[in-house]
Image (cartoon, rainbow over all chains, first blue to last red; front, top):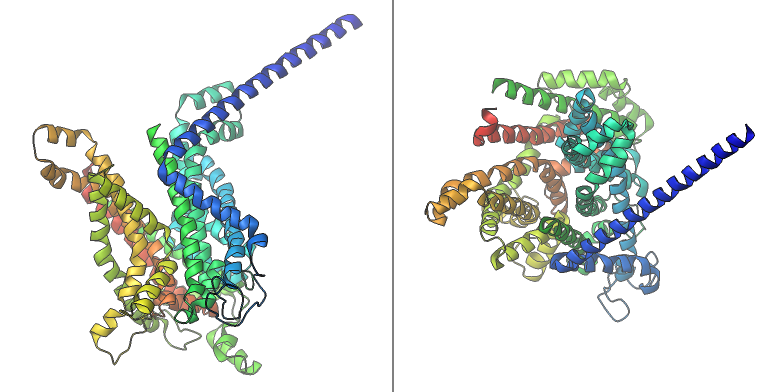
Amino acid sequence: MSGSSNSLSSKESIASAAHDQHKRAKWFERLSLSIARFRRAISRLVLSKSATIGTAIILLWVFIAIAAPVISPYSPTEISGSKLEHPSAEHWLGTDHIGRDVLSRLFWGTRVVLLLAPLSVLLGIMIGAPLGLISGYVGGVIDLLTMRAIDILMSFPTLLIYILIITSIGSSPIIVVISVAIGTVPPVTRIVRSLTLDERTKDYVSAARLRGERRSYILLREILPNVSGPLIVDATIRVGYAIMAIGSLGFLGLGVPPPTPDWGGMINEGRQWIFLMPLVVLAPAAALSSIVIGLNLFADGIREAGQQQ
Amino acid sequence: MLRFLLNRFGTMLLTMLVISMMVFIVAEVVPIDPARNALGRYATQENVDELREKMGLNRPVIVRYINWISGVLRGDFGQSIHFQRPVADLVKVRLKRSLALAALGFAYMIPLGLALGCIAGITEGKLLDRIISVTSSIFVSIPGFASGIFMIVIFALWLGWLPGTSIPDPDASPLDNLTKLILPILALSLDEIGYLARFTRISMAEVLESDYIRTAILKGIPRIKVIWRHALRNALIAPFTAIMLHVNWLVGGVVVIEVLFNYPGLGRLLLEAALRNDIILLEGGTLVLTFVAVSSQVIGDIGIYFMNPRIRFE
């Protein structure tokens, strides 16, 4: 009796070990497959000129953001010269209306943009992607209600939503992230929904359904990986939009509150002196544009690579 | 057709209703006292209380909202708390200026964007296409305030050709006031041109690859004629929708450009109303802007309905 139970458990353990091994092998296979896919994607990207230029621009700004404390000649918030100084050996881009070094503020401002914009897009995707998945997969009343709500949100000028939220709650980095995320949710939901509608009818989904998989498994493990490709391209462009939105908010005086160096805010503060010291506003405007150009070139490159495939 | 129209107008009304409610609720949360703001920091508390009573600010939100909406239905948009003037008058003046800006922008950017996109789509892969594509990629990446700043620095500061602000002067000649609008219009339309050109290019390239175009070319019809007669009409459907869907993006651009150039349009009025928590004015302005945005979408839908027979006969 005891022997048989023992042999049963050992059989079980052998079975589970075999299962584990099988699982591991499968996992390894999947890993090597995704590495191969990644390398192919990279080699295609390198071939695309616009993707290369875009990546170079983005990497340059990422480097500046990380190295800001080392490469900035002065503190971004402390006065280091006289007011509105012209460019000189001490202040390469001159000083602003309080006497802060423009170059240092520009470098430190990179951190604000490169942190808040991706964060808000991520938050928007975290809300929008499940909404789109459920709405597209389940359909019916849920789909109808979600899409109506999304239609209403989308027909309303996005910038006005930001203005309303920020004037009512007050500005802080978190509020900026949340309001830009709210603007990101409707388009993301729409895209994920339409992709899900396409995927839903495919065989692998019916197979999973026949296997008796749970709905959450089908959505997250079967459909989501298949819609993530186009979603990532879209997210790259959305980060560009988010950077523009955060810049616009700063420009309207609704962005990250001073004295934090924020590009939009620098433009807002320096605007009055544009005829005296154009560099104070020209530098952040050019920086902001160049980052968005980099992101869009990168997205163009990915799309081209996808088409060639 | 009738059902389609009714459905679209129903959605439009629903949208405006929901948004007007949202604005009231959001404005309720704002910690700024509009009466205090209108009278200034040095007004006595009694005066502020008196104004609050007079403007009905002490009543509950729902009552105020119902009062406001029933007024709107009768054509009365209420009084601005800050300006102490009817909202309808304020909005009308400002809207005219903003529309002038947008209309002048549309008048040149739509043909330009479409033309550039068509040329790029026809010459896909060639040098001309590359140049147009890269330029439009750059154009869409420059936010309105940044392109506005580049324009001011180049044309107003360095070259001195055009004024850097656009405050209209009633004494100046109409031509002078018009030249003041050139820079804001350019700044406003740059990314729209890029957006439109990109969209048209893809659409044109797709249409040119379709079977019926190949048939037409193989039949021996000259390429120019094929493009003009057959491709153009189909290639322009998608960009047309894109323009109409982009109107609310343009509204945001108008706010930014008006602030940058100190142009007293509706966008700036709305921003000021939001900052002062002048609810009634904010509501009136938002309602008008939402109407513009939503009705442009309805027009877009109707346009597609007529341009694309496939939808009509479905």
